[in-house]
Structures are given as structure tokens and as C-alpha cells.
Length: 281
Image (cartoon, rainbow, N blue to C red):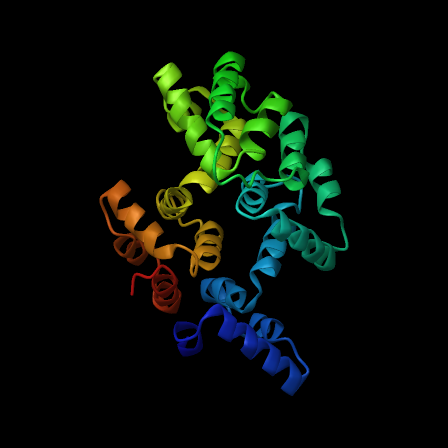
């Protein structure tokens, strides 16, 4: 626990390398064999490279009779094109399988097409948006109709994948100006099922990821029982990226501190580690 609490990810990866050189063993494997319970399920992942961590999540999410599209969407919408190529390689090393083929095998319809496009279509990188182009795309969204945003493959690619975060913000402003509606509100109110999850993950991860991950923590904690898999995934993945902002969004949105909710739903050394990773200690 002291090692985790007082080291950065880079330092832990250096420890892993030193351990392997000195003892000829994987520290991750050693911890996995010696720890137990909820603490084990979060602690071992702190000694993985972030790309390997995502690959392992995808392996779990694409395993069994029912694939978890939320795990796949989280991976595909929160990483750059270069990171996705690394994730594909890591997934292949973990499973011996091609990520694209596994997605095709586990999903169908427009969701399958959109996931494959998220994996393969280059992301927009224009940090200085063309106002005319963004206004045109906002009009396209209005013309095609909100329920069809995810069902129309070309619209999804052009607007939600090939637009940079800055362009998506501007598209949203033009859409609000033209229709009186906020794009995120429209998705919540007029889109349903897996397409709703898809569009929310894309927009939030591009515009305000901290609010999205605050919501994920809330959903993991509230209700009957704790979704420890989701909670652990967020705490590990975002710990050194934007956890302070996630914590602040949490309190502003739910009128309770993340610390209070974590303490109310966890216990023991697992609780201590969750508080550390959530920057709530």
C-alpha cells in the first residue's frame, strides 16, 4: 500500500522492470497470485502500462456470450489514433486475436460499423475550426434528425469522428443557435439504447471527459451493490490524468463529495486505496 500511495505510474513501471531484471518474474503476476479480494482487483492494475491495462479491459469486455460495449466504447473514444494502434498490438499480445475482427464478431448493425470506424478512421486534429464547415455540419445534424445521428454511418464519421474536439464544440454552438437545443441534452432525451451510449461517450470524451467519468463513478457506487469493475477501471485509468477535476465535477453535480460516497460503499484497505486513487484522502 505504501508503494502505491507514494509512487507515480512511471515509478511503478520502473519498479516492475527492476523486479523482472532482478528476479526473472513479472511483478504483476506475483501480485496477482498473492493478493486477494477487491484490493487485488485494483492494486495489480496499478503496475501495468496504461496501454496494457486497456488491452486487458478489452479482453474481458469481449469475452463470453455478451460483449460489454461500454468497455469497448470507453477504449475507442478516449485514445488517440496512435494509442489505438498500440492498443491493437497489446490486445493481440494478450489474446492472440485481432481487435477489429473481435469487434465484428461480437457486435452487429450500425453499432458494429461505428465501432470499426472509431477504431480505424483518423481523428480530426484541427485546433482552429473552420466556422463555415462547422456551421454546415451543424445543419447536417439538424437535417438528418437527432435519432439518426448514430444510424447514418457517413454522418457519424464526418461529425463525431473526423471533427476535432474544438470543431465539435463549435458544431454544438451552431446547433444550439439553429435549433435551440443542446446536443448533449438532445442525445439524452431523443436517442436511446446503445446509440445513446455511443454518442455520449464520443461527445463527452472529446469535450468534457471529467463529467463523464464523474458520472461513471456515481453509477458504480449508487444502487444495489457496487460495480467494482467500473469503479476500479475509472480510478486506475484517470488517476494521473484528470482525477482532481473528476472529483470536483462529482461534488458539483451530485451535491455530495466523492470521498463520502466511496467511504459509504467500500471498506478496509480497498477503501483506503480507492480514496488515494480518487484524490480523496
